[in-house]
Length: 559
Image (cartoon, rainbow, N blue to C red; front, side, top):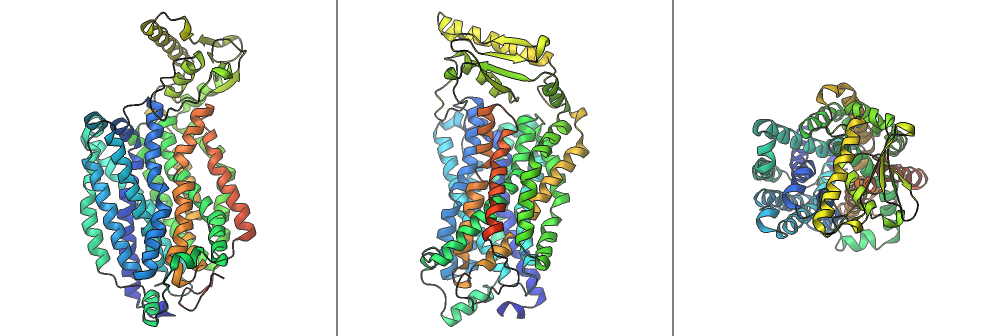
């Protein structure tokens, strides 16, 4: 087998160089996610606050949407011209696009052109990342000796978390050094601009590597695929394995990853009102504790198999998410948890008058019906509430508390207003009264730093990260082993990036839209739970165990 004769020092160099370069790419990609709150203000100022935040998450997801297309374009190149040179190209695209975000004028400066250009840059980042991961994982796997492929590729699996961790450290450092005001105004650009230095270092590191021994042997023998996309996805046997890999492994792994490392962060900041710096620090500590388990589960998969570890992680996530996030609320913002238990909030309204609190074109101020006025107020607070259908024709009301102690604030009827000014006065009065009722019931505007149980929060976040390491640690070895060498780059990249780009990448947007629609702060978890459960079923029935399979040039088919 070509990889078995590679010297040990070469293995260390291969893993270090491939991993470090990929860390830098993930750093670039995830900066946007960490700064979604700031970016929503800078580039989506033309819409209401709730829509702006969902838009910022949608722009974050745009980079994920095109990742499968990047997988096709660069996967094909990787199978045609080689692993090494393809991920040099992807790295250059990623680094330059990230640098350009740091230079982009805000919405206040150039209007709607700002978010349009921002989304374009995110699309370029997504295309680049679509070609990067498959190249790095394939390159390392094809160097790994027999019996250590899960262990070797697990270092590639750590790169996304290390990239996130590096971005967290930079953001935390700059926020602390500059202060929140300066950081929000202009300091947020510095992490993007600094990526140009990482680009130079990454390209230099990657240039030192030689081509994969498996690809080099195929090239010498003239057995490389001339039509890798047709061969990978046009043949029924290969396409079947692609679909099983997607639904029976990657989709569940993806939602577990993004719930544990991104949705948890957004939940802390947006729902539990923990300040950004504190939330970042708590996530960073959990990542430090949990990251070594990527390698542990990769190593373990070389002994007991890939499939059972991945599916166990997905199954545990589906079972534990609701209790874990409920515990996170209690630990991070106990005043909020107490208020929810003591004085639940209910929105009573005629359902015919209610709109979904999301405006994709920024023209709806949600002030034409009493239900929309009440719903818009609750959406701005970010607090959880229950919906109850009221009688037709009655004005909407927010009820704080239950029983005799409940206080009800009736929303104004816009039809009663003489003009726009009087309507605005009535709406502002309603908002003031509702805010006063919530404050009297103990609902906090922000999480009290003195009451945050940091140990408990870190423990919960660490459990979420451990679920990520189970699902993600062995996935690269599994995908590499599923497909023959001549089409491996293309075939493994597509299901990985559909799973992580679409199922995972859209998770924050979809989940927060569900929360905004239902009013329940936990209902966004139904999305990752459903996908993780689907993966457990499909993977349990159809996913083969790949431990022990060869990855050399002799395997000519997917089976």
